[in-house]
Image 1 (cartoon, rainbow, N blue to C red):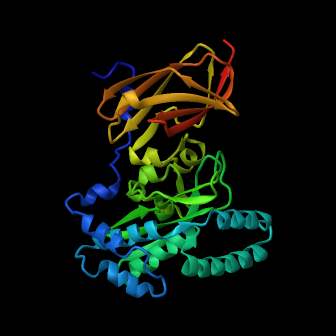
Image 2 (image 1 turned 90 degrees about the vertical axis):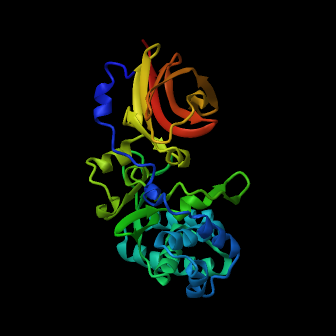
Length: 338
């Protein structure tokens, strides 16, 4: 039974899908994934031939796109140092539009040359490959440029556009995807890219996608929700696992929160793929300080969790809600004296 006093929260729950991949639940994508695996390590010398090999035996557009997407994610390495170099170069030239334009042209040329030779690239290279191969397969596909939000970027205000992804047209409808973030991650400790394919960002629900993607052209939000830009820059930090489990922070909605020492705080999370509440935990982090914080979790209905906790140590911390030791949602909390 839902507790009195939280009913108003339910009235404002977004109508959320478990990613738009559910639109194609009657189609088995196993064959597409197997074909992508069959062509593991294939050359980029001829994209038309590669696209044909990946898609010619498939009958539906979503299978064709899936084979292309899976192949790109599993065969292309994220070039972290090129990303950092581009970020620093763009930052240095941000006030000189002519030099910035020339930088972008030169960097793009080098990026695509390196992609072809070494299968290493940044987000624009991933988006370019997805678009080119999809179009060779007869699919409508666009490159979307905009802002990607992480723990370091686009917090409280927009920086320079720093990310690219794709929109694909399937069955008379546009869908969003991000091959860069599906492919894996760069481990700074070992200085190498960790291939870790997941389809979290494959045909993702637009509401969830907008939590860490904001396009320059807002039409590519593909949602009519109001206040998206405010939610994007001011909301709590989300991760791949947030998308995987379809989690949305219902309350508080803002990244930065305050409370008094000893005051009980209540958080509400929506999970469209119900998670096991016994695996949820909370952790306070500030520099080298790291401490678990006891929580009480109650499932109010099949998609709404209530989390209660009390903070005893004053200061400012990153508050991480974790699932099986994986970050799920992060707030920045300031705990004051009683």
